[in-house]
Amino acid sequence: MSELLRVRRLTRTFGDLVAVDKLSFVVPPGEIWGFIGPNGAGKTTTMRILATLDVPDKGNAWVGGVSIQEDPATVRRRIGFMSDQFAPYANLTVHEYLDFFARASGLRGKQRADTIRQVAGFCHLEEFARRPADGLSKGMGQRLHLAKTLLHDPDLLILDEPASGLDPRARIEFRELIRALADAGKAVFISSHILAELSETCDGVVVIERGKLVVSGSIAEVAQHAGHRPRVHVELAGAVEPAARWFLGRPECGDLAEHDTSVTFDFDGDKTALAELLGQATAAGLRIAEFRTLEADLEQIFMRTTSGRLH
Image 1 (cartoon, rainbow, N blue to C red):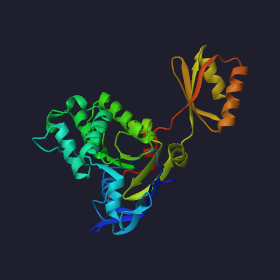
Image 2: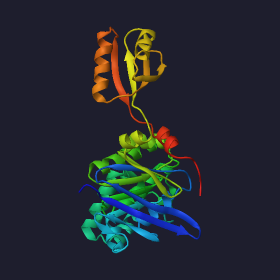
Image 3: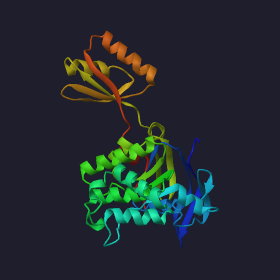
Image 4: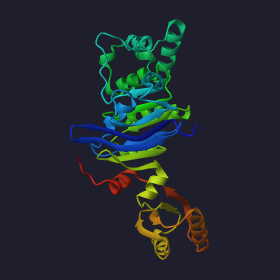
């Protein structure tokens, strides 16, 4: 299956406000796709529609070929929605909280017990099973929120700002959990304002503004759309200044920056041209210890593709 989620001309209005405006994109299985846009761009409204918690005025979306409009009950069994707010029930332990939602998902007997154990293990919650669910730290609470979302083994995860408020260690651990889920074949559609985090996590991205699609695709495709040129990092075993002069003399190299032991620059060319540049630099006597392209910066892409206008 080349796509797990397909969204086509999705539209949602609230009075005169067009919150989502003819939005279309696809998300393939086994990948993590970021959903980014300014505050008020329509991200949460879109996610609520995809989670069958709201109904579009026009358009449709399909999860594994099943329409959110025509068969929402089946769609709910195929998706796991993690909202941006986690509010555990009072007077329940972590185990009791998971057990409640496992029962609500229709799990019974040994299957329910095994599923709770597996999900708690995956989210590293075993040692917290008897703790009050409403007494966890922010990071552990997000793990419990994710564990609840995974109980019915959904194909598509829709995660609205899951890393908000987490400390650096908790964000890294949460990111590793999300990557493991994608590696297991699930599609992950995740919104976040921490763009550096998404840059390290996502395979693709959907950018919206004022409810409309700006661009969608792989990180490389979106970077190209934004006019982003590959940036090259060259670590040197010799002097930096002569190397900087040499690269500045090349017409395909621009916006060069010198560092203590390296240079970075934008490169206007494909992989073949880049390989040729490396060969020529070595032949010119430059002592190169490392030569690599840097990943596209989502923050730069975001600034280039959006204007910051609100509804």
